[in-house]
Length: 426
Image (cartoon, rainbow, N blue to C red; front, side):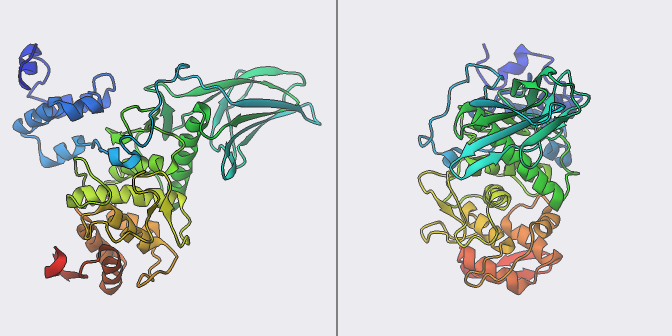
């Protein structure tokens, strides 16, 4: 048994061929079976040893950056004890609808299939589900009402339909296998499958709906050419909520803001928006500039995806239970001041795109402009990101005004390409 972090390489002499460290590590990241569990990586030095070995074999900075797909530590987000994580579901990847109701139609040569979820805000249609079955000439897709039509079917024809929570861009899975559910469809009937808000079926559909809605919004706003791999949402995750190696881990599918925050990390990563900072963090404290930017941007993405831009009290409902609701139009005074606090980074970015005028904030720049300014930049801080905004689309005086209102520090000063903060910034 190894007694030090380096002994494992002695036990496995072919584990890390130093002639091709990039190829080896890429295989480790691309192969889920070979990839260390994120919780294990947090507690052991295996991943660090791999990276140090790679660096010792003269990996370039560009190569290393390709491999450092982050592990975010978001225990404060859902609360260490604020949410009871669910145990592994007993049915594996097969989901059971909470209700299935079939009704006869006036016509006998078609069938309607509808999937909905009951929530406290009303009935939510489940959009973008792919329905497959042996009697279908081609898969069906649920529309904006959660409905798909099987047309020109032979009267009294019956088939077994199946829906997987997977498409080209997204998967909701227990581990590596997507969740699925099946049901019987008779030609000449309307079949409605209903999910309760917090049931297993409802939580899985909630994750799907949140992610698919955000994907569609991104597609219509900035396109999806950066989205080059299928993004998997693992649920239920008993280790908390986090993003790791291209995979989103979710403990509660019905907590919309937490799901979208973690998805925000994935989009931030795929779009190469900025750097990731490691380590634990609390939303009302200050820490490294990179960590504040990555966490703040993830929450900003969640807000953009789900909150009305004109909301005078924009806030998150479930995020950080000890401080909930998290208001981003009105950040509490006791929150750490300055650009190394994620809550204030979120509020700053939100004020650049929202349409509600508050205080000195009169800017209404769109998500698209901020995205175009930051995409591919891997900005190291919100200050560096703000330089990109100034260079791309927003005058310094406007940035200064919004900066001062949210960070409660002196306005930014720019000297060529170097960002200088006023002396009393700290």
